[in-house]
Amino acid sequence: MKDNESNLIGDFSQSFILPLLSLGRHADLRSISHDVLANLLDGTFNDCVDSYLIIDCRYPYEYEGGHIRGAINVFTNEQLIKDYTEDKLCKKSHKNDKINVKRNILIFHCEFSSKRGPSLLRYLRTADRENNSMCYPYLDYPEIYLLDGGYCKFYSEHSCLCVPSSYRSMYDPAYTSELRKFGLKSKKKACHNYETSLLAGKKTLKRLSFN
Image (cartoon, rainbow, N blue to C red; front, side, top):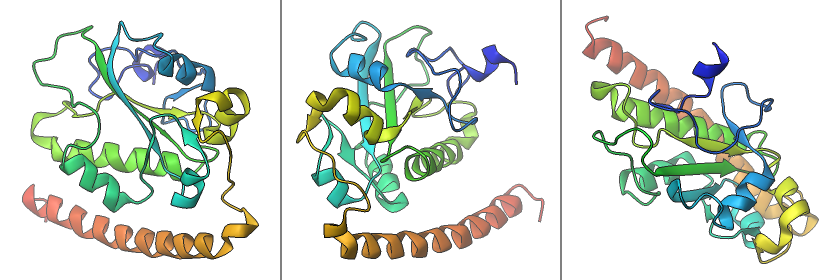
């Protein structure tokens, strides 16, 4: 994929509005730095961003121990899809949007943005693409970012933008039981989602007369 193509948002209509990192940990995702997110929070991009939502994919006890100002806590596929279906995320794009209108964007992260954040971001993009399969390449949320380094890096540089201004690690020894509970839940959900995706794939093939 050419550089100019990789910098297009999900519906391929225009380039990402926020400055991107040239080298992110996830080649298929577009990442922004902690400084760019801090600037977004401080209003630097108000002239080109209409709405934004930060989605914190850490476990609830991590989120409660300190999170980025305005972020919501979503750590399961089920909750993400529920919020998506019930329009509880930020403003959706519209099929009649014109190029260069102010953007509606989502930013995902977890503690380090290495696994949980990227996984939920990909899940939403897949669901969005499937939901709008009859009007490809339109997407409800074409512009989605991953926060590079996650909450760990953001907090180290911008703790004043965190509420409360503190950091609770996933492996905090005081929350071992919570980690075990949420960890087991995540494993069970991952297994269920894999089986569900296989079934959905078979239904899609049948609908398209390939089976």
